[in-house]
Length: 107
Length: 115
View 1 (cartoon, rainbow over the protein chains, first blue to last red):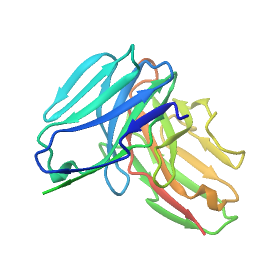
View 2 (view 1 turned 120 degrees about the vertical axis):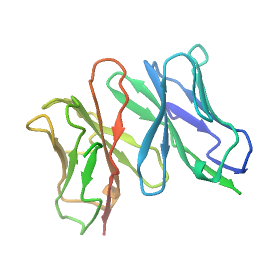
View 3 (view 1 turned 90 degrees about the vertical axis):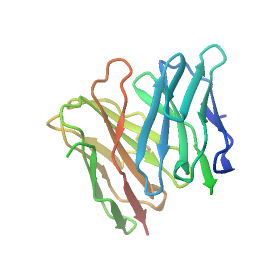
View 4 (view 1 turned 135 degrees about the horizontal axis):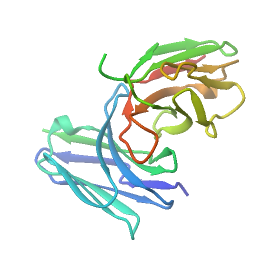
């Protein structure tokens, strides 16, 4: 069993839909990161959180430390949101990554 | 430049060749990380430096992999006698500090293909 699991693995949506990506982890963490990876490999950090909820534009990330679960929400999705979204947890000095959720948003 | 840079962006090596991958972190960033990302997978930790000290190399898959950061800035990941299973994207990331939780900034990666 992976230490960080994401669901779903693949997700397709129509433009404007509300999207949720889930992340569960089984190790102790000091923080959780949501990352976005576009084709070609570049990774951009979206959020780093250790409790509660953060919002940036149309993106919202929540974490429940007791349940070891986090969600990334995208409101009013747009084709430019198409990418791989990766959950990663900060464990001691390194990040442990999920396998990613491939999101495709169609116009 | 403002971000983390890596070179080369693409590398094709014949099985058995040695390769060297370079990472230039953001100026002033203390911590530097190397990750390996196989096709369709999330990145996996390889090794971590704080300044010039390699504090964790537990993720290096074999003794063919070696990383250094001699002056606490640029880092090189070297793979000796490359094998096909080494084909992956190698990502470098840097952060301001290794203490506490700091955001990691990723480079574009080097895509290594071993034929």
